[in-house]
Amino acid sequence: MPLLPPGRPDRVDDVPTATLERLPVYLQVLTGLAEQSIRTVSSTDLAERSGVTAAKLRKDLSFLGSFGTRGVGYDVVYLHGCIADWLGVMRPLDVIVVGIGNLGQAVASYNGLAGRGFRIVGLIDIDLSRVGESVACGDISVRIRPLADLGEAARQAQIGVIATPGSAAQSVCDRLVAAGIRSILTFAPGVLRVPQGVEVRRIDVGVELQILAFRERRHSPTSPWQPGAVSA
Amino acid sequence: MPLLPPGRPDRVDDVPTATLERLPVYLQVLTGLAEQSIRTVSSTDLAERSGVTAAKLRKDLSFLGSFGTRGVGYDVVYLHGCIADWLGVMRPLDVIVVGIGNLGQAVASYNGLAGRGFRIVGLIDIDLSRVGESVACGDISVRIRPLADLGEAARQAQIGVIATPGSAAQSVCDRLVAAGIRSILTFAPGVLRVPQGVEVRRIDVGVELQILAFRERRHSPTSPWQPGAVSA
Image 1 (spheres, one colour):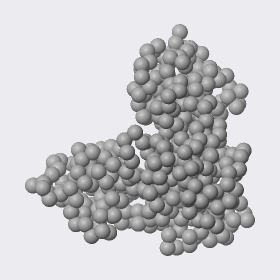
Image 2 (spheres, chains in turn blue, purple; image 1 turned 60 degrees about the vertical axis):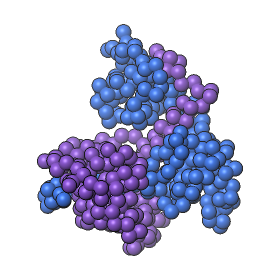
Image 3 (cartoon, chains in turn red, green; image 1 turned 90 degrees about the horizontal axis):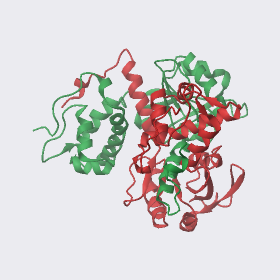
Image 4 (spheres, helix red, strand yellow; image 1 turned 30 degrees about the vertical axis):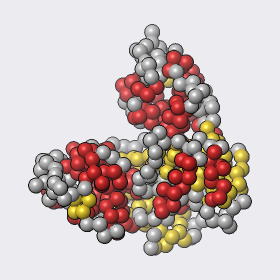
């Protein structure tokens, strides 16, 4: 008897972004369970390990189809395979990273990128003294290429990562888009202007810290966070 | 005549997380405008530069109070001051970073951290050969300290950043929490277990790439993203 209702959205577009953001987390937890040779997992357990409620987990998985048997739980390997398939982990996408400073290097050498369906195919830096340097990208090693090669390298990739200083981000973005890249991950602060059809996701360490800081200060005994204090 | 309704939530807790995530973006855009000596900005213009709709911007700002004058727009410096005050940028919080690899170093040397209200007060690494090394953190330089100093360093901070390999993240987290840290930013994949009252934000490059990848593949002509293909 299925734990989940058999209904699924007819179109992938119907999957909410929040669900999409949680699927990789479930995948990761399931990978860990499979590595420990754990065969089945209850929705409560899987949810707890993923940091969500069981109701939310079941709802998220319902977008993918029907899984699990009441009283038995989910088959770890099967559910892992379904989510991996669905997220496309089995069919690697090629990634170009522009800006090989600390952040770019961290992305390029990010452990487990290959296991998540990505392959670094290009590393670009403006600093000519870095050009030719080898960076270990999982099992392979990739050489840093000069900015002049950006277009050529980008044409071989599907995803572009911008890890340059903020001042260079828009021009790098423009060149990635001109080379046909439609999916961009940027670490640069500020908003990138892109044509319709190009998807940008932004990781901004400063913003994340500010959200934490806001909540931290709110709990502080000397908190000045009375909204009235700032009203016009 | 105020552009925004005068009503404000009575409790800061009422501010939605999504709004909280956008306030730093507005702050950043306003900083840029102020630097260009631009004195007023329309909600349409500010919204566009921030990558949101004008309606969303007005709604977000309504949580802070009433701003702007119809037909004139927002006073850049005043609005900047209000958001900065509200986010607490004026009262710096102290940050400890654990794990000074590429990611940790990127956070420590993140440009503009000071301008956003943060001060790096501790850098911790398990690698004794790194201990004593100086890392430029904005205007100041901070020496890397050994893992044994984690507790002591954490007691002087309000925010802990975990940039260690995933395998070390939970134990570092436990030690940060034991030292009194209630706000944690982690780059390690996987969910951290923390007691109630401790806030964790997670930046996972792999998850961000997987979300992009999912959408990228969806648009691909050979897309296998028919949910039926994975149903149980």
